[in-house]
Image (tube, rainbow over all chains, first blue to last red):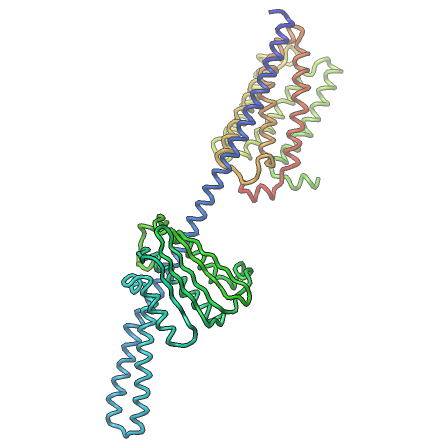
Length: 275
Length: 198
């Protein structure tokens, strides 16, 4: 090999090596970007899983607390009140008519309180929902609230009713309770519509009130935590909640979910179960 | 100086190494003019550049074993350079190509290990906005391309045509190295890297 040829060969090999390194760097950049995308996806999935885990824990704690209160009302307070009612009955027999009438009035009030507390105990307990299902539980709640004349509730059920599973039904019931509470407490609504649509591959729960409504900004500030909670709860059961409201236009909450979609929490313990 | 304060530790070291390297360049030029050879100055320049580079890699590596290797390699290179200078390639007789082969080879290895680390721990920010990426490609491009040619300097010199090759490669690589390292210094920011968990 002559000198010129050697020079050409050396220059060529150096240039090829340089090009190879550039090629390697380009390949690395592509690989790195792919890894970034994959990493981001994994991070998002971890965040969702963490959020769901957190919500699950919150719900578990909440349900345990509600169950405890429910049992206390049922086993303790109503029992004491029943005893008070009986005592009043025995006392009234020994008194004159004017006092007897007052005692009987008090007995009736105590009896009414016992009934109300039993209803409250049932609505707080998840066992009731597990036993009779979502539709029947809501029906009973509607019946009870309609008696109060604070608000007029209408319930519409469409399609063949099927079970959504204890956890989903419990979460949907809590969303309903939150919505009715908001309508009564904040919106001053006079009418409340509940619609349950059971389609083959889609379940829809729509809750509408004619109250004061609110600005969509509320969802992003701390006062809207109850509303955000509804959205989070819907996510937890594999659904989606859309909250639509404007000041003066009432509020519409739609929760939709695929009844056959695998739940993140499937196979896990019931939210109310003690570990 | 304001920019220097914002730099992370490895890039502060890089900024200092720039100045030290510049100083060695002057000394090398001076030696070539006065003593007719700059081999001695270039040997010191190469060893000092390698020391700085290894310390930078020491700070950049997350793996403790690699950190130790980066530090240990400094002692190894210094001892090898002394042995090479005394017994194998004395500065006045030949160019210290063995030292260049060793330092460039180790640099390429460290760069590859660092690329592997980057893939293991990808950051959220765009790769082109990461100072470590520019630093690493600067070292990889320079070391990989100059590896054989610096190593073959004595061969080129014996065949009287080495200057052309070295000059050609030097003209391509040296400005590229400075530009890429400059970019890494410009975009390095302590806050950004802390936010990204580095």
